[in-house]
Length: 374
Image 1 (cartoon, rainbow, N blue to C red):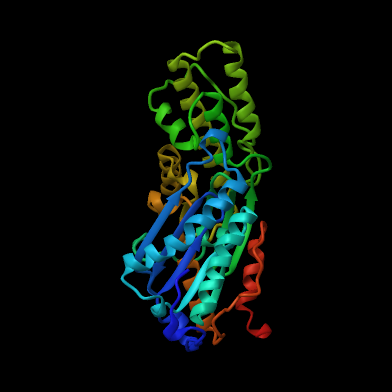
Image 2 (image 1 turned 45 degrees about the vertical axis):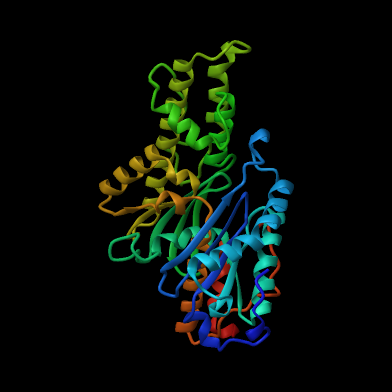
């Protein structure tokens, strides 16, 4: 751990949390990440270690992930400070994803973050991982003129698939979500059926470029239905049925590529239809945003961009490195929260007592900005 004896235990002035760089930690799943941002959103350093120990198992094993986070984080914190050319004493606050996610990884990341915050006498900000994705589009430079509230967020990843009305920092409304599998989970399972590696999203997308989807029609669950809930389980089952005749035989590559292309098109159609309904439910939206690992998929981005154009809205998706889990979004969410509290005359957060949680509903975030509760 980084120890800083000159200021050990010396509390920083309250305003330093919004005037000095912030160190952020992300460890909610299998990627271990750190970043340092200035209060205006300038990224001074970002480091990521992606775990490979889960590949033989075809998915994330929570115990393996937690142990890897524990082994990696102290060194990664030191490396991030070195990249930023900052002493630990220069930090104004420390933030970490504290939920939702895999509880073992959250405990490790929050524990390291809290330990550093206590050692430096700085505030600790517990960040909601979903809120961090929701606010990523507001990072300076990602959207010309800045992402203005309210906007519609499609969060689409291995563990999440939902449409969220982002109405302000701390103020979110879930308009709809998956009733079974998340989109990323469906990509992983279909990739496994096709004999591809994990994670499945990039592998399916690469194979789909070779394929003709026409001979392999697949259903679009919930397409055209009211609301903006999602369903991918039936689509996954339909893929399994297409593959059933091959049983123990080797799957010809043209067949695999055609099914991959058909599956990817079906996902894009489903998501496009559901997001169109979400926009109908949010007529005041100024922007359509996609975030999460599956938002890196080129076909999905193209479909959402076209949809946004038909609605006269800009479309924004973070660069690929900021679509997947990363510490930059964690630091930015903390900065946004600290700014919002500062503007309301509230003191900086210091959430050493807040425990990591595998579930953390977004509707609880508004309490942080409640002036009457201060």
